[in-house]
Length: 518
Image (cartoon, rainbow, N blue to C red; front, side, top):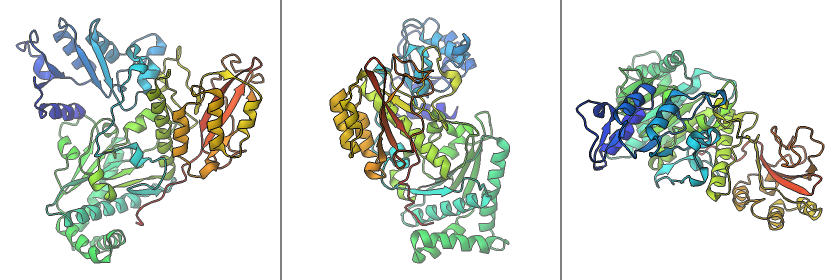
């Protein structure tokens, strides 16, 4: 409901003619759809879609724009010979003459599900606006991060880390407002769990800090004030520290904490959460903050929610709530997160970026990568009869193999070797976008690239020798011969003189460095 309301509000403020209407308005029996054009917003649930279908049953040539199209729309029962309710209702809405346009930042699920027989060669890439900060900023392929990245120990979930993050948020808000002619409101998003009981636990440190700072006689006031002063001094210098501390104490009552458990919470002021109404706004939530909803003036994100099993790419990409119009305050922005979770999240975006680069070339179906820690999408959504998911590998069209190719794979300069290999086997079998991608991401210099000796597939019992492919992936362990490499290339060939190049991304990200000391 919150995502619908945000989008509806934007459309209504755009002076679009005709003006956008909520689904609840048009299902009124007295509201006629027989003449003219209509822009209708409807939440993607079975009850509302059923009512909208009934109202629009005789309306021809509808255009369905499905925002967050990879959520709820794909048929999760595709491998059971059945259809989910929402998928069926949207299909009914499209009918025989309708046009379906799916909008999403994570198209893998739609593609692997073959949702509405979508054609990935017709996908259109929409670049973000200039003020937008996204994956290139928060998960960069090279260089230092342009914001404050604080990496936590992976095994310690002590509440002191949340409390310290709260202190730093207060300091940054104060510093920004003291340097401005007017005071502004900012928010801190705390996302540690999907469980409601955990959300209440997360609220306690917030209440503890803000209550203590609003009462100079409280037992914790002196201790918290000292810690805030130390943080302010390390971030903005000793001369500013006293002013910042004074500002925080004077305005400590200008705070609100909003728990966003679910869309069914009738008493939650979602508007004050997404567009902060108090100077120090704290937003605590689970699944509801993981998709689509944008947060204005978000200045801090404390994210420790990990997965007990594999990280699901599309889910974690959608959880990147730090993305948005952040450029104005980006030097003050802070992401606090466990180190391994950041590394896994970073690899999600590496895989995602590679797939999107492949899509842009419009040379066949994109490859959606997965490995031992990262799943591309929910397994139930994959059309297993028609899809093979590469295990952390990208494979390219088959080419004719000859022994002279092996001399290229033994090159001392791997980057030069890649270019010579492309000249030898062609840009289809080694795409230019992949070479360009590798050249942009060389944290260990030339050692970041590993060219491996070729191998035959004839000894692999479970491999398809003619197609030169294997469901488990062709690559085995890749670190032994090239311990510092992130980009691994290897050719696999069969007895019929055919071969295929395999690319595998492996290893942690080594360029990370905080831009702040505290």
